[in-house]
Structure formats: structure tokens, C-alpha cells
Image (tube, rainbow, N blue to C red; front, side, top):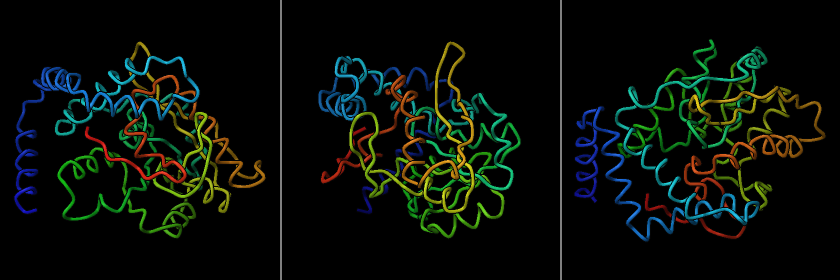
Length: 283
């Protein structure tokens, strides 16, 4: 175990010393290796089938798998040079962030440039409180996890989901904007992109309980590049219960994911399947 950890630390040090200017070339070379690996390609295809196969049976899953690997490889290779290769992105609908006055839930998925939502929202004068899994705060966390935490907390503050509902509620009652993903490991059954899945109920439940609005943020790309879209605030009082609110939140996310499925980070790990254990990724 100690030897494996030393190898992991050494590999991280090597990656960190690669010049930032060399990252695009390195990305092309390592992506070429990925595309020649039948096992990696098969896993990527499974991710894409799991995500959109039910609603896009005609989709070219092989092409989506190649695009998915390109996105994942870019995440991996730029992780150590995020200052250069992972800047803030533009935010459409930033005027809706005004609804965060007095506390609000910002709801997102692990799609597109999701790890830059705090940095991008900060450009518009809003400081996010980002809920993150407990392992990001472990002092012995793997180097890549520490890098992901650094990237994700630029321009915002991270806190552990181990704080539970009380931690979120306290922040909302203090008038803060709290970012919570709905595709974190959970036990709530939902329908998303035509399949029953297991996700997290926290964002909808806590917004409904506290009466704070939900700001759904989706990820997109166009000729000008990647960007976020902040949708009109959802008032929990307009929904019969938190389940109805969650269904609405996910319905807003669906078109964005369907338009750009390749940019979803490990969907088979993000969403559970009722009665099926998650599988590990080789990417």
C-alpha cells in the first residue's frame, strides 16, 4: 500500500512539472492511446449508453464514446495546470443570481465545466458555498482529489456533505448561496433521461423545507465556447412537495445533458441504478 501511494505521489509530481504549453500535445497523445484500448473504449461506450441510450436509441454510441474520452482526458491532463487551461466561463442569465439574496440553492450536475461554477459565478459578485463529498477533506486524499478540490473551490468556499442537512440549512438561513448537485450518491429514485436512477434528494428537500428558491445552472457549448446558463428561479411554494420540485429541476437539466452528453463526468458513478451496484472506471 505504501509503495502504491509513493507511485501515485511521484506520478502527480511528474504531471505537475509538465509545462502548461505542452498540455494540448500531451492530451492528443494520451487520447490516441485511450482510443486504441478496447477496454477503455468499451467502458466509455457504456457510460454514454447508460446516460442517453434510453432516449436516443439511434445515437452513434461509438462516436459519443470517443468524444467522452476526449473530454475526460482533457480533465485529467489539465488538472495540474488549471490556472491556464480551466478559466472562468461566461454565465448567461446571471441576472437571476439576484434571487440568491436571502439565501438560495444553486443546483448543478457533474456536466460540462461544472468544477468552475464557483469561479464563474464569482465574476458576477456572488460567493458560493459548495457542498463536497467528505473524502475531499481527508488529509490523506489522493493528489488528484486534492487538485479537484482546489479547482472546484476557486472563487467559492467548500464544505463537507458530512455536515448534513444542518450545515446546509444554517447557510441558507444566513442568506448564503449553497451549491448542491443532484447526481451525488443517494437513495432517491428519479426518472432522468428515460431511466429510473438513484440520485440525491437534498437540494430539492432543503429548498422546499426552508422556502428558499432554486437556481438551476446548466452547462452548454457554442461557437464562442463553454458557458453556464442560470435559469429562472424556482419558488418551492409553487410545488406540491419536494419531489415535484426535484422533477422540475431535473427536467431543466435534461436538454443540456442530451445536447452534450460527452461532457458528463462518469455518469455511471454519478447516478445509481436501483438494485445495481456502481462499477469502477478505468479512466
